[in-house]
Image (spheres, helix red, strand yellow):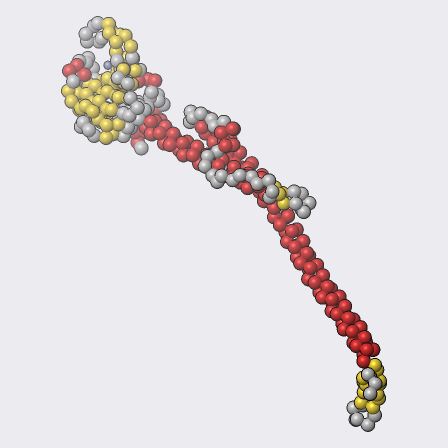
Amino acid sequence: MKDESRIIFISKDQKKYKEYKISTPKLIALSSVFLILIAVAGKFGTDLLINYSHNSKIERLSRTNTVLEARLHEMTERIKAISGQIDYLASLDDELRTVLGLDKITAEVRKVGIGGSNFTIDLTDEVSGFDENFKLGDQLMKISQLEREIKLSQESFNDLFTTFRHKQDSLSYLPALRPVLRGVLSSGFGIRTHPVLRVRRHHDGLDFSAPKGTPVYASADGVVRYASWNGGYGRMVIIDHKYGFETRYGHLNKFLVRPGQTVKRGEKIGEVGNTGLTTASHLHYEVHLNGKPVNPQYYYFEDKILNEKIVSN
Ligand SMILES: [Zn+2]
């Protein structure tokens, strides 16, 4: 028998058939060519598929890139805007500090700020492949600097608030009210001839002539230290105020407060009288600052309407 193979094709109804004879080496060669063709086609198809998925991945990444670029650009712009706003707040802060007598914060100190995260710049995290280069490290540095500037501003605002409260407080202890509303100033502060003793001596306060019984008001907030008879001063009230101030009210017909009592500016503490060494009914009023008598006229407002408003409040 010859070394040959047969390939037989049979029709569907099995009535016809065709027979091909082929030698075995030829069959092997043909089969090999067929298999190689299939392999090549397969490889080609797979490459096509891979290429397709690769391209769609690139397309997706490119879309993501566009979005990221836009967002990064937006972020940079926002950082700039916030930085501008912080600078504006810093200028307001400086103005307030000047008004309240605090030292300005120098630009260098402001830029350093306080606290915040310690971010060190990494030169490798530059984002390229965009139309413009974004240094993410720079952006983060800027944000961390803004954080520190904001913290410094917060501290400064706390300072401002404390100082303001302190000033507001100290104002309420300033003897800013005229102690009698309608009394006529009959004797000033300084050297004068004493009306009773007829000798030249220093008058440590002011005299307001007013009818007996005219209300006498505390000129500032404070605590009553003394309310009693005091020799030539007659019935006298002494009020301690904070910040070194003390006020004294002499020749009172009567007093309405007792030692240790807290009084508010404008509160009635007594009535004008002529007790002690006097020739007529009047209020002797002294202001002491850090233990020394000072001219009370430097501290109270002459404006009648303002004084009346303070008393009626
Ligand atoms: Zn006097």
